[in-house]
Length: 110
Image (tube, rainbow, N blue to C red; front, side):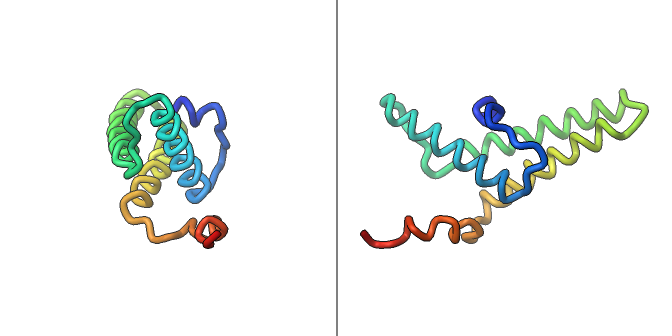
């Protein structure tokens, strides 16, 4: 899933922008799965698992960088990426409608 997001990467995105891109990319992928006769994951369980695993990879990489790097710049960059991953996972687990305002038209009766 990260490969699909990389094609449309936006450097310096905010937490809200990252959350929007992550969920949007994942849901589009699930739609495409369904179109091909595969079982979609509309509950985002696979996305949560992906971000839990991503955090574990980030922690492992941070340990390796700490051991190998003489300066903190590489480690700091990885920590910033992991903060976005942590924030995204938190938003997935505790979504309270932060993005609903952008989708008001979808909630109107036709």
